[in-house]
Image (cartoon, rainbow, N blue to C red):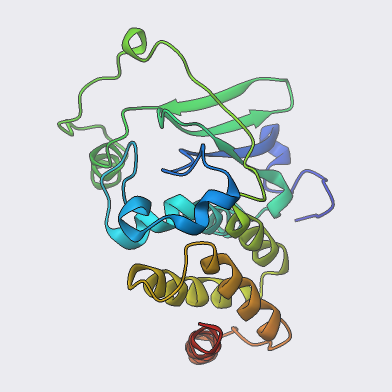
Length: 232
C-alpha cells in the first residue's frame, strides 16, 4: 500500500481510483454551525431518512458514523484514507460508489432500508426477498450531492486524522465519541462539544502508542474513556 495520493496496490489491478462513501448529512445538514449550539438530543435523533437508535442517530448527525466507515474501509480494502471520499447525498438512495481510472463511476442504489443489506449478508452469494419496495427512479426524480463542510462536521475530519495515523488513534476516537455522545444524550454537554471532547481526548493520547493486541486495545479504550470524562 502506498500513500500520498498514489493508487494503492489493492486498487491498481482493478483500475480503481477511489471509493466514495455516501452520507445523508443528517438532520442538521442545512443549519449553520452557530445554530448547532441550541439543538437538543431529540432534534439530533430525528433523522430525515432512517429509523435508528439514539446513539447511531447522533453519530449520523455529526457524521462520525461515516468517519468510522472510512476507517473500516481503510482496513477492509487495505488502502490509505486519501483514496476514500465521503459525499453528502441527502436522498440516501445511492449507498456507495466506486470511481475508476477510465472516468466511470459504478453506484449501488436502493431504498433507505437496512433490510436490503441484511438480506444480502444473510443470503450471499444469492439474492432473496427482503420485503423492501423496489426503487422507483421516476418517483425519486433527482439525486443531489455536495461536499461535507468541515466547520459543520468536524467529527469527520477527526476520523480522517485517526485513519491516517492508524495505530491506537482510531480506538481513542471511538471511545471518546461514545462517551461524548452519551453525555450529550443525557444533556450534560451541548451538541458541538461532542467533537471538542473527541478532539481533546485524541490530542491528549496521540502519543500513547499500543493497540497491537486485545489487552492493549482494551487498555487504550478505557484510558480514552476516562480522559474524555475529565473533559466533560
